[in-house]
Length: 102
Ligand SMILES: [Zn+2]
Image 1 (cartoon, rainbow, N blue to C red):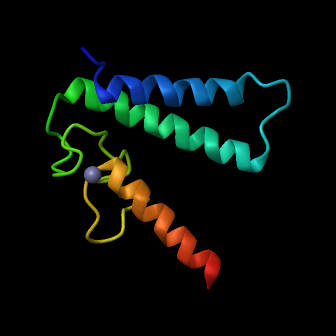
Image 2: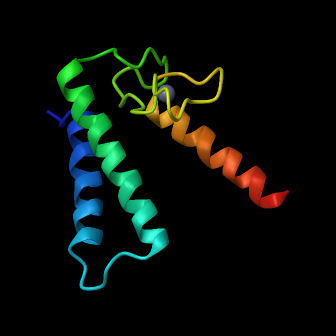
Protein backbone atom coordinates (compact mmCIF):
# COMPACT_ATOMS: atom_id res chain seq x y z
CA UNK A 1 0.00 0.00 0.00
CA UNK A 2 1.27 3.43 -0.89
CA UNK A 3 0.95 6.39 1.40
CA UNK A 4 -1.74 8.93 0.61
CA UNK A 5 -0.54 11.69 -1.69
CA UNK A 6 -1.40 14.27 0.93
CA UNK A 7 0.80 12.67 3.56
CA UNK A 8 3.76 12.41 1.19
CA UNK A 9 3.23 16.02 0.15
CA UNK A 10 3.03 17.06 3.81
CA UNK A 11 6.28 15.26 4.64
CA UNK A 12 8.14 16.53 1.59
CA UNK A 13 7.14 20.14 2.09
CA UNK A 14 7.80 20.06 5.83
CA UNK A 15 11.25 18.63 5.17
CA UNK A 16 11.94 21.42 2.68
CA UNK A 17 10.71 24.01 5.16
CA UNK A 18 12.79 22.70 8.05
CA UNK A 19 15.87 22.36 5.84
CA UNK A 20 15.65 26.07 5.17
CA UNK A 21 14.57 27.07 8.68
CA UNK A 22 17.35 25.09 10.41
CA UNK A 23 20.08 26.08 7.99
CA UNK A 24 23.14 27.73 9.52
CA UNK A 25 22.49 30.88 7.49
CA UNK A 26 19.30 32.86 7.95
CA UNK A 27 17.16 32.35 4.82
CA UNK A 28 17.71 34.80 1.99
CA UNK A 29 14.80 36.47 0.24
CA UNK A 30 14.56 33.71 -2.32
CA UNK A 31 14.84 30.98 0.32
CA UNK A 32 12.20 32.67 2.44
CA UNK A 33 9.92 32.55 -0.58
CA UNK A 34 10.57 28.84 -0.96
CA UNK A 35 9.98 28.44 2.78
CA UNK A 36 6.60 30.19 2.61
CA UNK A 37 5.69 28.10 -0.41
CA UNK A 38 6.65 24.87 1.35
CA UNK A 39 4.71 25.79 4.48
CA UNK A 40 1.69 26.68 2.38
CA UNK A 41 1.86 23.30 0.65
CA UNK A 42 2.27 21.59 4.03
CA UNK A 43 -0.79 23.40 5.36
CA UNK A 44 -2.84 22.51 2.32
CA UNK A 45 -1.75 18.88 2.52
CA UNK A 46 -2.57 18.74 6.22
CA UNK A 47 -5.97 20.24 5.53
CA UNK A 48 -6.56 17.74 2.74
CA UNK A 49 -5.69 14.92 5.13
CA UNK A 50 -8.42 16.09 7.46
CA UNK A 51 -10.92 16.85 4.76
CA UNK A 52 -10.78 13.44 3.13
CA UNK A 53 -10.88 12.50 -0.54
CA UNK A 54 -12.43 14.40 -3.39
CA UNK A 55 -12.07 17.86 -1.89
CA UNK A 56 -10.36 19.65 -4.77
CA UNK A 57 -13.11 19.07 -7.29
CA UNK A 58 -10.29 18.54 -9.80
CA UNK A 59 -10.65 15.71 -12.28
CA UNK A 60 -6.90 15.30 -12.62
CA UNK A 61 -6.05 15.48 -8.90
CA UNK A 62 -9.26 14.66 -7.00
CA UNK A 63 -7.25 13.73 -3.92
CA UNK A 64 -4.67 16.49 -4.26
CA UNK A 65 -4.16 19.35 -1.85
CA UNK A 66 -6.58 22.26 -1.76
CA UNK A 67 -5.04 25.66 -2.49
CA UNK A 68 -4.92 27.51 0.86
CA UNK A 69 -5.50 30.76 -1.02
CA UNK A 70 -8.83 29.48 -2.31
CA UNK A 71 -11.50 31.70 -0.81
CA UNK A 72 -8.91 34.10 0.63
CA UNK A 73 -10.33 37.62 0.58
CA UNK A 74 -7.01 39.44 0.98
CA UNK A 75 -5.16 37.54 -1.71
CA UNK A 76 -7.80 36.10 -4.04
CA UNK A 77 -7.00 33.64 -6.78
CA UNK A 78 -7.44 34.84 -10.36
CA UNK A 79 -10.92 34.19 -11.77
CA UNK A 80 -11.38 30.74 -13.21
CA UNK A 81 -8.88 29.08 -10.89
CA UNK A 82 -10.09 26.07 -8.97
CA UNK A 83 -9.37 24.67 -5.52
CA UNK A 84 -6.68 22.27 -6.73
CA UNK A 85 -3.26 23.37 -5.47
CA UNK A 86 -1.39 21.29 -8.03
CA UNK A 87 -3.23 22.89 -10.94
CA UNK A 88 -2.96 26.36 -9.42
CA UNK A 89 0.77 25.93 -8.89
CA UNK A 90 1.06 24.95 -12.54
CA UNK A 91 -0.87 28.10 -13.49
CA UNK A 92 1.32 30.19 -11.20
CA UNK A 93 4.47 28.83 -12.80
CA UNK A 94 3.05 29.42 -16.26
CA UNK A 95 2.10 33.03 -15.54
CA UNK A 96 5.48 33.67 -13.92
CA UNK A 97 7.17 32.29 -17.04
CA UNK A 98 5.15 34.60 -19.25
CA UNK A 99 5.94 37.58 -17.04
CA UNK A 100 9.64 36.76 -17.21
CA UNK A 101 9.60 36.71 -20.99
CA UNK A 102 7.65 39.97 -21.34
ZN1 LIG B 1 -5.62 19.55 -10.32
